[in-house]
Length: 79
Image 1 (spheres, rainbow, N blue to C red):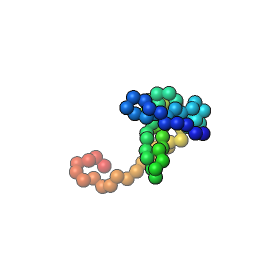
Image 2: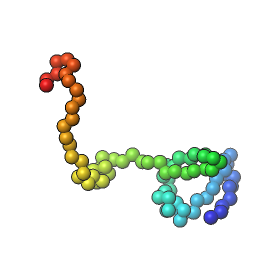
Image 3: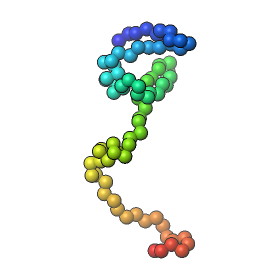
Image 4: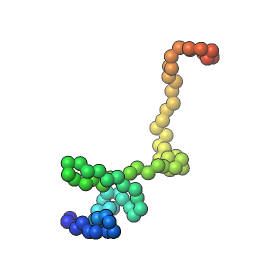
């Protein structure tokens, strides 16, 4: 798909079609990172910080806690 760079105030802008944004998983007002690499402009969605509720909703029960050795006591720790 081809498009045109247009003037927007003192900056320049590119209109991104809805279909392109949907394929990239980007929505209006999402935060993105712009990087220039080898002469190409790369637009990457930034990872949003999840709330505790969102993190808990993604939990699938796969974590199994276990003990681990952290070394010998170095002071007055209870062993």
